[in-house]
Amino acid sequence: MMRLDSKPWEIPASWAWTSMGQDAQVVGGGTPATGEPANWEGGNIPWITPADLSGYREKFISAGARSITSHGLNN
Image (cartoon, rainbow, N blue to C red; front, side, top):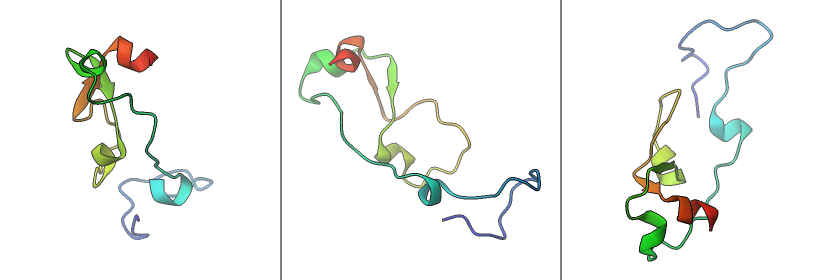
């Protein structure tokens, strides 16, 4: 949870600082079979999981630990 006194920059008065856990729930599920090579081998589509977000503090994320193939994304 974000500390109320840790506001990294000024925001409009009508906005409020919050943390992801206060406004959203990160859940798992929907990952194609990890034992199926066609889903992962040579994949170039970033696959973000809750594990990738654990402790992550940056504003943007562009890649996780793994990437998925088009086949895996479609299945």
